[in-house]
Amino acid sequence: MRVVIAEDSVLLRVGVQRLLADEGIETVAAVDDGVALLAAIEEHRPDLALVDVRMPPTFTDEGLRAAIEARKRIPNLPVLVLSQYVEERYAVELLAGGASGVGYLLKERVADVAEFVSAVRRVADGGTSIDHEVITQLMARSKRNPVDSLTAREREVLGLMAEGLSNAAIAASLVVSDGAVEKHVGNIFAKLGLEPSTSEHRRVRAVLAYLDIG
Image 1 (cartoon, rainbow, N blue to C red):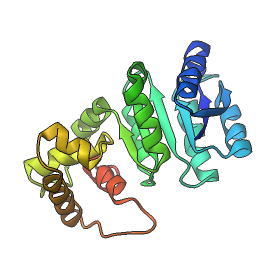
Image 2 (image 1 turned 90 degrees about the vertical axis):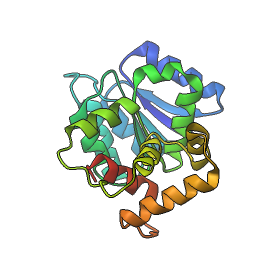
Image 3 (image 1 turned 120 degrees about the vertical axis):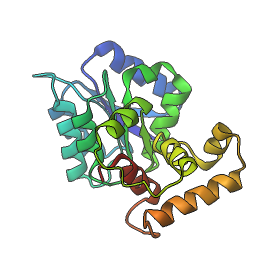
């Protein structure tokens, strides 16, 4: 796997690069601003862009804007955003496109190497990895939940899907069988009207519906 890292903190940028290298993941470019990120994306066409939300010159949303622009230039480019805090507006704007291969994690998650690397691989493979704190805050801001037709257990399963867990991992978390989870997932897709599609990942579409931003 080849990644581009955009992070203005030298310590974090180098640290993440070394962490990924230990897992056999190559960093083809490591930059510190949005303009350099776009240039690196177009030059290297990486498997994933790992992007900080706030970067120079204003330290507001340069990283996110560059990530969104990168996905316009290279459709479905997997992007995993790292942020110091949950910033709802930025999370919504990134995720609302509905494409696969998106993630939003708090920077503190990097400390859990196994969890972080798992998120990197999952997003690069077209899945999602959304921090639980992000999910909680986005659900709180929603005035209308489009998944009211789901049972409590189905909403629980969908919430774990939003965090990026596989069916097997969901089964282990809920202490149920794989078959039970598969049945719940099938019911979720049916109730949300998500038919098989070659252009969109149903799990991603279900997650976006769950967050009421798709």
